[in-house]
Amino acid sequence: MKISSSFIAIIIFISGNIFAQQPAFDEFKTSKGTLIIQPVLHGSLILTHNSKTIFVDPYGGSNLYKNQKSPDIILITDIHGDHLDQKTLDSINTSNSIFIVPQAVADKLPEKYASQIVVLKNGQGVHRMDYFIQAIPMYNLPEVVDSKHPKGRGNGYILTIENKRIYISGDTEDIEEMRRLQNIDVAFVCMNLPYTMDINQAASAVLQFKPAIVYPYHFRGSEGFSDVAEFKKLVNSKNKAIDVRLRDWYPKN
Picture 1 (cartoon, one colour):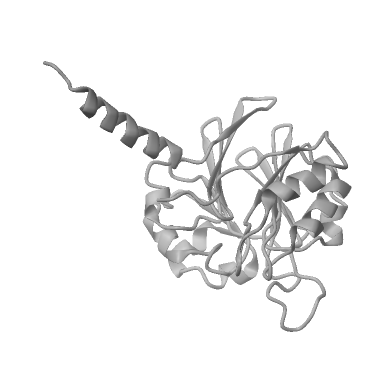
Picture 2 (cartoon, one colour):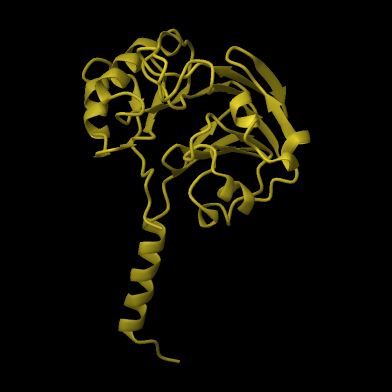
C-alpha cells in the first residue's frame, strides 16, 4: 500500500504538536534508583521514585493526569483553588493515597478522605513510604491581618528521597525560613505578583540558600507571566554554579 507524502507530513505535524505540548521531565540518580520530576501546570508537579508516585498540588483537570499512575502520596500546600482543586482530585484514583496537608486544607477536604489524611503543622515532619516529608512555613511579607497567605495556614515542603532533598516553596515570599535552608538539591520557587514575590526577591533568596538546582514555577500572576529568563540571569550573574532550569509550566491543552 502506498502512503502519500502529504499523509506522512500530516502525521508528523500532529505528532510533533502532541509531544511539544508535554513539559519536559528530568531524571535524577539517587542512592537507590532514579527520581523523575514532571512539571504539570502552574504549581503542580509529579515526582516518581522507583514504584512510588507523589502528586504535588494536583490542579488543572483530569486530562493532565489521565495517563499518570495513581498517586501514593498527595501533598497539598494551601486552600486556594490552584492548590486544593477538588474537581481534579475527584478525577484521580486516590483510593490508596496518603494526603499530607496543613490543617486548613484538611478542614476543607471531603469526609471520604478522613482516614487517609496526615496533618502537618509548620516545622513538623513525617516518614511515609521510605521518604521523610517536612512542612515549613510559607507566607506573605509583611505579615498583616488581611494577608493572602498568613503564616501557619499553608505548608511548603522539604522531601527527602534517599540522598536528595527537594524543596517546594508553595505560595510564599522570600521569608527568613527559606533563606536559612541548607543542603537543598532541587528547589521549586514561586514568583507571581501580587500573590507571592517578584523575581528579584526570588533571586535574592535563591542566592542565599544556594540550591544545586532551582526551577522557577508558579509564575503566572494577575498581569501575566513573570520573566523567568530574567530570574535566571539575576541568579547566574552572581552564582553560575546554581543550575536554573526553565520548563514549560503552562502547556497548551
